[in-house]
Structure formats: structure tokens, C-alpha cells
View 1 (tube, rainbow, N blue to C red):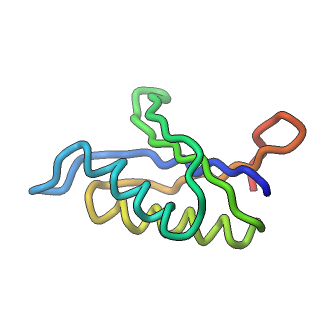
View 2: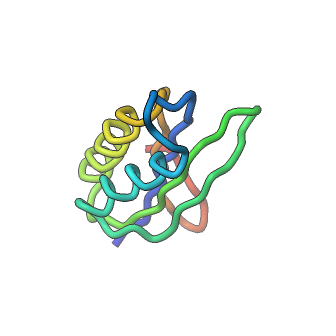
View 3: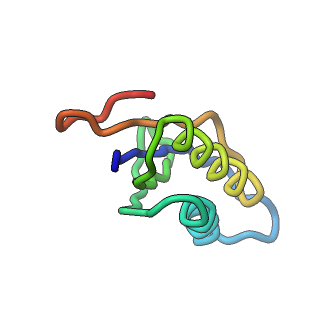
Length: 95
């Protein structure tokens, strides 16, 4: 089964929400559709990003997972367009 990474930049939290809710909402959204492999937080050019790696059968399904993750996180914090990557031959390539 293919492995994917959904990466989402995170901005300010919405009032009434805590930092832990960002990753919690992302994982809840992804795990309701796919198998979560790993999570991480990274900083790219000073912008925090959450990374959720997951397994699912097809690229179209992976896009749906990434969309669900974006929708869930956007209820907790401001966010921008994310990225979706597929593991192919030992490298992460954009979908």
C-alpha cells in the first residue's frame, strides 16, 4: 500500500483553541479515513508545518485525506495550501 505525506503550514490559532488541537485535529481527520504511520512538526522558512504520513490505496483517496486534514485543521488555526507527497523509489515526490 502506498505511503503519503500531507504537509500543512500553520498560522495563528483561532480563539479558544490550544496548540495541541492542531495536530490532534489533523490526526483525527486522517485516521478516520486512512492508516496514520507517523506525525511530525517542522519549521520551514520560519513557518511551522505539521506532517502526517499515512497509507491508503490510491492518489485520489490520498487527495481526499489531505483535504479532510486541511478542513479539520482550519477549524482550529489559520492555514494555507498544503502539499501532498507520495513515497516512490525511496524519494518523496509531489502528487
